[in-house]
Amino acid sequence: MTDVLDGVRDHYRATGLTERLKTVLAAIGPEDRRLEPRQLEALDQFHTRGLAATTELARLAGITADMSVLDVGSGVGGPARFLAATYGCRVTGVDLSEPFVDAARYLTERTGQSGQVSFQTASALELPFDDEGFDIVLLQHVAMNISDRVRLYREIRRVLKPGGRFAIFDVVLNGGEPYYPVPWARTPATSFLLTAAATREAIEPAGFRALAWQDDSEVAKAWIAQLRASPPPSLNLGVVMGPEFAQLSANLGRNLMEGRLGILTAVFEAVSINT
Ligand SMILES: C[S@@+](CC[C@H](N)C(=O)[O-])C[C@H]1O[C@@H](n2cnc3c(N)ncnc32)[C@H](O)[C@@H]1O
Image (cartoon, rainbow, N blue to C red; front, side, top):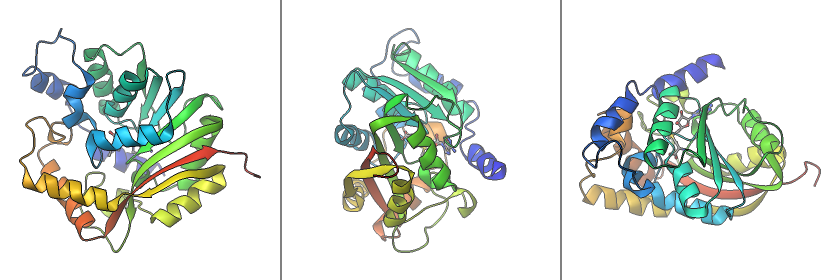
């Protein structure tokens, strides 16, 4: 288990990330000028379809201002900042990668949201929170890095209030083995993809009932086609993952276009295990 977590940490090691962000953001404005969360969307939404996907998932999850939201595998914090800015809710992010958590805190200071949005370094398999503290848990493009899905979904259920909602946005196995490297793994050793059906079979026994279930593979393909037709913006996820990100991203596109991988959006309600 530790070997797997070390492998995943290594994939997202992002040495010197906060310094790199300071350098590229200097082109937008001086360090003491407050940024709008939207100005960061090209580099802080680390998943297929970027901010559009976060916007849709949040709407499906039914977030409101009085809610406390946990973003598991929060990356550099773009989804957390967007949710806080859009809904006025409190958001906590946890991520395995310390450089990502440092970067998330730095970017959140730059957007002036540190009072509303916070980040901690922790594993999704051992969440550092009491039982039943959150109204919503978000998991976007993280499960494919996690081999022990039983423990992952039990842990998420544990920290959710009864009746709370669990919103997922996952890459899933579809019609064959993917080409590697991909944005979440350089080799199959740190990639633990399931089909959409197997994902649901792993989630529901932890104490969840599906409220929304969408195959978003075609929407993702249309997005890939659009990306291929236009040059990438100068700020992009290459700043976070390094120059090879273009190749990782191209492989994701190829896997989706060939139907080897698919995209799943779903929302579950936390129920008691016997209902
Ligand atoms: C593809 S990124 C997605 C980041 C973010 N959810 C987003 O959509 O912008 C995957 C993230 O999951 C984190 N991650 C992977 N395995 C994890 C684990 N066991 N516990 C916590 N975070 C994990 C990685 O460090 C990385 O930040």
